[in-house]
Length: 295
Image 1 (cartoon, rainbow, N blue to C red):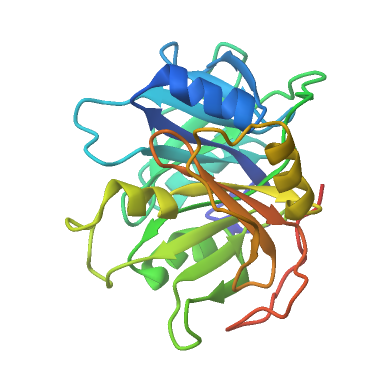
Image 2 (image 1 turned 180 degrees about the horizontal axis):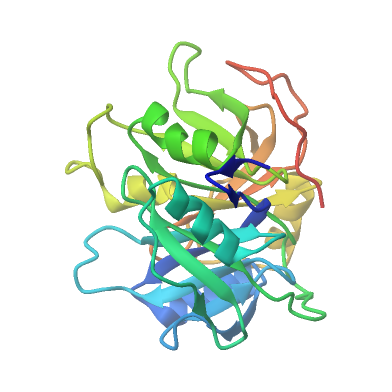
């Protein structure tokens, strides 16, 4: 593990959750409980929100849409911290000159957490949530959130935080064409989940592009659930009539990374991607440089 001025960088083991906004709580609940098949529980971080459990340690947090949200529907993404804990990471970042809160926060379920802003102002949470005992939603389409993605303008600038400071490791990068990088995947240091930079604009740009639509932004700000077979998952959704009224792909496809995938969208346009754990075709643009996630 990295050290800085006597502080130790704790283990960063995976994705905890993604937090998003809703303008229609009832429709959003239907999407996450019926289409995705997650289990609804009270939000330990915000009494006005709810969480939809994917497994016993990962979830989608849904919050009321702020009045000033505009087209934005992403609040934050969160990573799970292992030994020696969240407070140690707060001290580690403080020792490196990063702006951190004065103390960690505790949720109603004893969740320990704190938030920081990355170099482009995205809210990033670090947490050590308790494992929810025996949370295994019977209809969940998949049990593992393998990556989250959000808009990034400057790959090198973001890397100063995620790679240089926190130790994230390169996994894959690619684009719609071989000569352009549209996606950059950075795995957590002590695991195989990853953060996907969704590249837009140019270095120096800030925030959501003025010309971007909410639909396009929702494609970029997304989360992905791992699959042994997206074809099997798609068949399950179709057979259960779980895609009725849902904006979604007409069928599964092979992505530029060589992995099977299927995209569907919640009522506010956030993309919920189903993706195979392993590639079945050769990826474009670059090889994989770290091990795949698994169950």
